[in-house]
Length: 243
Image 1 (cartoon, helix red, strand yellow):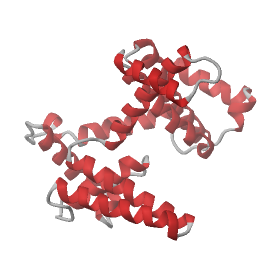
Image 2 (image 1 turned 180 degrees about the vertical axis):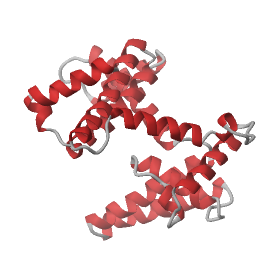
Image 3 (image 1 turned 180 degrees about the horizontal axis):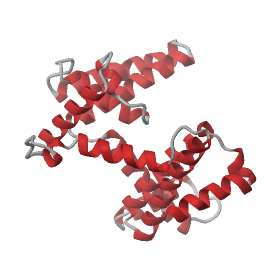
């Protein structure tokens, strides 16, 4: 770890690209690398997983180095803060609390977190994250106080309602209103997934991974000027091969 930190410090001194970066300019790479880790884990390729975890760690090291240069904090402070938080939020392991199930552990985590960060609103605890994750977290949060459809069927009815509003917007409203209605449809669909205990983010990532594999099969077998019907046939072949 110390060798890595030395390497990063030298890059900030001698590499023109690294010297130019700011904490703000790097955040998009952090998000990208997190998705690369997810894709590597899904692929099951251990070497890719190891490499992508390293790329994600680089973002932490890089940010810590820049804040260290500003005399704000360094990498050791990041590690210390994380370790203290893990101990504090696991009182059933490091303290006298009892938790025997995943649900009990999650309840303790949220209880401890609330004590650390008094909230102004219930939704202030929902972190900024990819939109599907935020939507599901918001819905789960408000459902805890009863702001939720009692059944999945009612949630599906709400989606049907939003779908009809989108269809109407396509022919009668502005592009901004179409975008709004499309967002409402996505939000309703996430709610259906939540009630089915399905992570919308994971479900969509799984579909994207599957699409990549099947389209790669099409690319391997396609010839010039193939029709959509012919490509659809290759798509079906890819499905039959378990892709």
